[in-house]
Image (cartoon, rainbow, N blue to C red; front, side, top):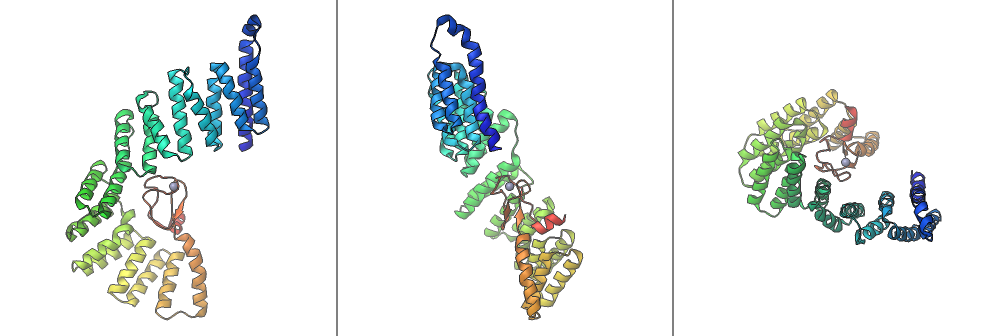
Length: 390
Ligand SMILES: [Zn+2]
């Protein structure tokens, strides 16, 4: 792949040089000019072939001074350098273009857009933000600039600005990002909750549910907020709502919901809810949550029965690992069983991760936004063993 691009890097200027030569040979013959342009070209080419890209850039910059029609070559070279990860060189080429006083307005905007992409690729978010903000007045570049800014503000965790840009994108390009905007409000709500600003959190959760009625995350947080304000019934209502919106996400709230019911003196209801949910929407996480409560609220025998029943219905390595652990805790484990358990544990750890459905990034914790590819809602709330068994 890299070899292929290297050849492009050499071929592109060569093609430009050939075009230029054919175009200009008559005029130059008539005027009897010294042929300094192609010489600068071939010097640049020579540097490229000798893997001295910086000297090559100098030579090509000289060419563009002599012939403004080579602007396209500079865009092509800049792009190639950026794609090869040589961001500094791409920045140099695009900055040089941008600084040319005689550059047409159209090309100037294009150079600014390319420079923004260079900065983005190089992780210079402030400078990328600056480039794209300046492009907002350019009708031909506005939508792309808004898309880039949306990405940048998410990377910078500037959720307020991200919401503004998402709204503008919807207004101007009809690109809806309701699910994302709900997450931005949830991020702000979590921040407010951490700062103990409950009113601010409530405001953001209301807005999150306004833009996305089915925001599971907003429902979970609304339950958390209600619980914090001492309104247990309201919290229970919000968390139950999660199961109705999308039962796949039940494992994320089942523990909180069961504990709230128990605290309200409704332990039987809590246990029924857990057993029912496990039957209707089996999952390893739900099994863990249920097992812990049955063990604490009933007795070890009932907890083990729960594990055995579930394993019979849905055999899994993670489930067996739990069962062996429970047996060991009850004092039934002997040396070979313990050895087997150690072996299974090593495998279970790998199978117990969550995995992004977009990029495959694995994580020990559940994420609303993938740390690998920054997609939202790309983590199914299920462990890898379950995902692969489906
Ligand atoms: Zn991902």
